[in-house]
Length: 81
Image (tube, rainbow, N blue to C red; front, side, top):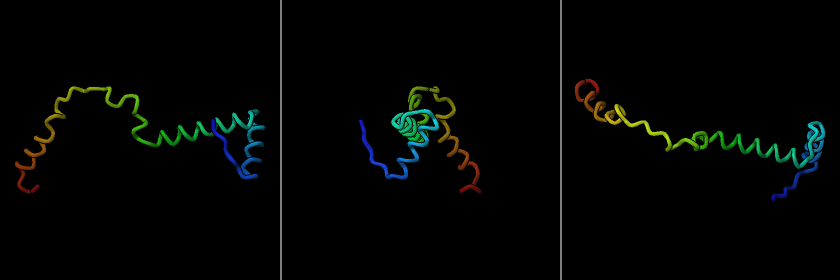
């Protein structure tokens, strides 16, 4: 459980907005807090993929050899040194 203090102007705005939406002020605050939390967490790249990160295994393949291929590419073209 949380409690919060609001200045008079914000309190009045929330009361009016909750009335317009047909919600209690408490429900209005809960919905606003949930939306803000989702928005904030979605902005973090790690949070977007948290449910699948580390779960998918591609097996490697060519990705395992990219370092060697890059080195060989540089070694074979003297203008890139």
